[in-house]
Structures are given as structure tokens and as C-alpha cells.
Length: 461
Image (cartoon, rainbow, N blue to C red; front, side, top):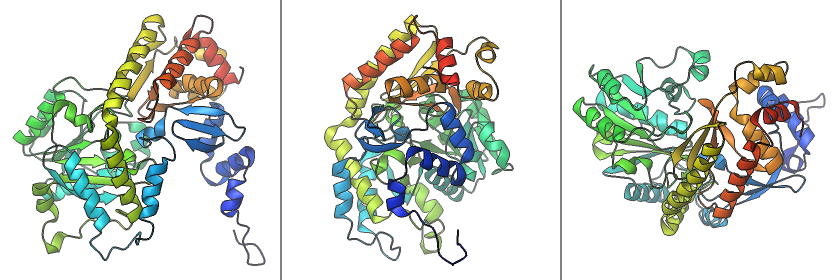
């Protein structure tokens, strides 16, 4: 804000790095998102993290934490992987954003993506995030088919921009922004019969689906569902878009989750882990046939573009990330450690009724909780915090893990009763054991879940 003398009172980077927790929090509440700051404070998540390496994060008091949130899947190697950072620096002398060129770094990254993605996926459009990758896929499908409708699943999460939100499966995030993109039909996830009924109209440009629904609470579809979806989309001339933004790059025990059923989509959406935890980057990869139908030829080559998509440093991060995942076979590590983690969680489920279900593949795991009998939370809490408790129930456990055991987790957006466990792919077995032991302690008879809720929601420890 300009003062009377025509000068500005700027913090700059030095000022930002020197902010203490309270001052930083106050500025966040004033200038960024007041409601979010209130929520974070209510559930004990208003920490000031100042240093991070791998799975480990430190707050401003020097306390060490384990990050089992992993940037919602965007931290395949944990925080600040030095080899990826060095590779980005090697590309630092290149022009970062120069659209008047056929970028060698974009070309190389697109080549490597074509090598590791399934089937005949070949041509890539680069953007900056997962929701942009989805937007690109939806536009590509309409342009390629000449059709206008999209089919999506209940519980789906594909981002929060208009097109992505229009094929999202939770009304809370959609209602304030209606009307959204017309012609979007919802079907139950995992129900191939309902999908066929929707496709029979032969008006659908694409069916968009997550191979495992992340924000719905890490929901794994029935065996054979993706295979049947692929058959039905071919039968009715509809394109299949698989959203691998969260499941891609080794997360579920395969390089891509669709490979569990050997399904090859027409279009695949990628982001999160592709940037190696250092740079934001999104990618939409399609078959040559679909790309040419939409954007083939001089007149259509620039129908869809992005100013910042495919920047030199972002592409360098992507190239480094793919090499590291392939070199270290991190999908195999995710498979082995994920099976171990899920076995441990299932053991806890057998012991404690608080845990309703354990779901997932690889290192993408959801822990769903039983809710207490209606009214009990009202008895142990007061005021507006009751609404937070009902809406963000898994946050009670996440808050306890954070504040007592120094483990970072969070709930899933479309099912707040599910806590996600999504550590970096480099996580160690003893770190998983630590989290399992912490959960055991939380759910033990000496500390029942209602006393946990009371302590978290009233601030008592």
C-alpha cells in the first residue's frame, strides 16, 4: 500500500524469512485466507516450518516432524532433493520462458513421458498444475470428437478451475460457482452399468476417471472396472481420460496406476510428482490420433497454449524426476513399503473399532474412521468448533499426530472422515513403524477416541 510520501513499506525476502510464527500468522490471516487460518489454528496446524529435507521437516523451535502428507503426492523424493535442484540449476542459463522456439527441453521431456507412459500415448501439452492438465484434456476431447458432454464419477476430484470443477464429485466445492460447464453427467464410481447407460447417448466426448480416487478417501475401484470402462468408451466412440495427477510416477506400486489393469487411455493427465517436489508442472499426454484430430495442422496448432507451461526449469525438473524414479525403481519400493504399511494398519483395525476401513495401493493410503454417536461431540465441545469437528473429523487424529507425535498428515477433500497417508517414496520402514506406533498409542484403551476429540478440540494435552 502506497503511503503519503509515495513510498512503500515492503517486507521483501529478508523480511519474509525473518517473520516469527505469530507475525506470519497474523499477516496470513489478513492478506491471504482468514478462514483457513482460523481452521488451521483450531486443529493445531498453525505451525511455522522453516527447514526441510527428505521426509523430515523442522519448525521454528527446532522440533523435528515426519511428513506423511507428502505435498498430496507432489514430493516423490521428499523436500528439497538436492540432485533434482542441481539438475534445475544446470538448465539455469537457458531462457526460461521463450515461446518463439521449439524447446529442446520440452521435446526431451515429452519424449521421456512417451517412453514411460503406457501404450501409444505420445504427444504432450505442458502446463503448470493438475487442474490445468485436466482443463487441457477436456478441451482436447471436445476438439477431437466434436462432442460436448463429459461423464465423471461421484466423489471425483480433478481440480478447482471451472472445467475441472464441473467434472468434480462434491457439491460443496461446486455450488458457489454455478452455473458450471454444461453437459457433465455424474455416474457412481466403480459402476460399469451406470457408465454404459450414460455413454449410450453417444453425445459424450470423454469419460474422465481417476484409477484410484484420491480425494474421495482413497477409493480403489472393483477389479476389472477400468478394463470395462476402456471397452465401453471404445464401443460408444468416447475418449477415455485417466487422471493420474496424484497416482502417477510410482505412487501406487506401478509407474502409473492404470497399469494395474493394463489399461491404455486416450488421454492422461499428469502433474504433482513430475516436478520432483521442486517445480510446479502439469502435462497432458495423448495419442497421436487424438492430438491430430484436435490440433493437427497449421491452423489449429495454437488453439490451446500456456505462457508458463513447459518452462526450462520446470522441464529440467521433470527430466530429472523421471530419471531418478526409473534409476531407483521407486514404484517397486512403493509397492513393498505400501503393503507393509497397509498390513500394519489392518492390524490396528482389528484391535480398534475407531478404524472403519483401510484402503489404498502402494504409498497412497486412506484411513477411514467411525464417527461417534450423534450428539457426543456436542457434549464435549462448544460453539462453532462443533461444525469443524463434524466436517473435518479425521483432523482430530491428524491434529493429535501433529501436536503430540510430530507427524504431518491431513484429511481427504471429498471425504473429510478419511485421513490420507501419502509419504514420499523414499520413506524408510522405521518411519512407517513410528507412525503405526503413534496410531496405536492414540487408539489404545488408555486414550479413547472421545478423550482424544476432547483434548484436540479444547486444546488440552
